[in-house]
Image (cartoon, rainbow, N blue to C red; front, side):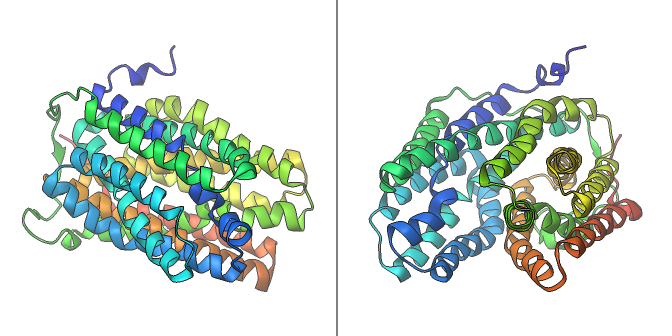
Length: 397
């Protein structure tokens, strides 16, 4: 049996957006090295660089719902094209800015422009796929992003050793190149949904505020705890492995490669196999795996046990993100998919801002053991909150 057979039926447009995203992400260099650029290249303090980076997160948080609405108004493909093109220009401009307050302003501007791509891209995939294709489509999209991210930061490490400004030039070239790919690609006409989705329990919201949709609001609140847990990968996990356990940075990089390789080689066939699964049941399983994986970190003190823990929560990740994107797609009211995806992306941006603060506070105040136990509990809270509410269910007629 071919584990990638689910890819054969995906529309051409899904492949095109995945290729374009791969081009863009392969040039992602500025953000991973921004703290180093600010502290070593411009000689700002760690706290000052933290504020600049946080300003990018604030811009991302603000722009998500607005970009979603704009996507519905002007079209998701058009918004993606110009988001990439303009972000390339801002990356070039960024390389010339040295004033602290201007860095804060341009970071917010960059976030608003570049992060507008996310809700638009997810809305586009939603509109181009059927109910049963969405998990696989979003898994393919994530594969392209992760494959690109495995290239950009590595290349950025070499370029930063030569000149930090090269990061901005190559990042800009990748964004503009991706925009050109979108502009000149031959896009198919929008497909028609092959089966209808039962939305009888959802308030018909056409022309009204999507925040009146109970399922959307409940889902975002219930999903937030597990997102905060997952984003510990960017904050307390490196502190735990390198600082507390005493492993080298290279060992930490190898451990993270376990996550990346699993996502690249397993996520698409895994979600193809789960295409028939109910989205909420998939999310419940993903939350349980995340809980077990992060909870096991409390007892992981050697490389082997760390690999086991990372493998478990990576399977949770590979289920959670395609399933959550598919769920939001399936409950979105026609003509407002971008806005739904905007609020979904805002939830992710909020968790991205909260995760380091919450994780670091627990880590410093109560120790790593209690941090991982808290992660276990928070993931379970999300899982059971989602599975317990029958109103969240989406079914095909």
